[in-house]
Length: 134
Image (cartoon, rainbow, N blue to C red; front, side):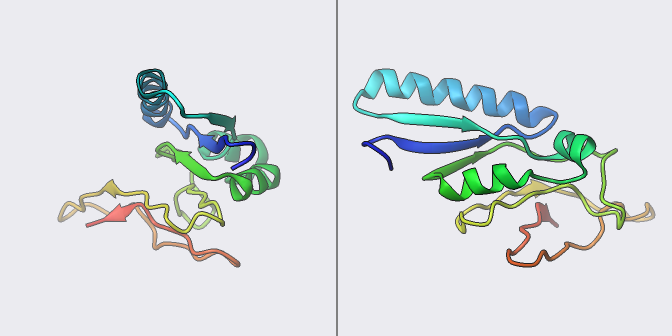
């Protein structure tokens, strides 16, 4: 918190994540107006599949640092079926400083179809939180 303002790093994500995050920001703004007394500052960070396509990284180092310095992170759904790491794993940056983050995505494996999601990767220095749940 800086000067009484909560600093929120916003990672809109990819696909539907952008729409859901924009709607979430609208709800937060409405709550701010109704309740009053809240002071929120947002920093929008690039991460996810679109970032990976442009830079070859899930999340830029500057974005990781900004997320680490934030009081909270608003993280939209990240990943696109067509964008994967060379080993087949999904693009899913996990900002290092926010141990409370849980990104859950329902995934169903259908009998007789190939399993498309590769095993979770572990990254040096941070635990990768897989969005997979059976």
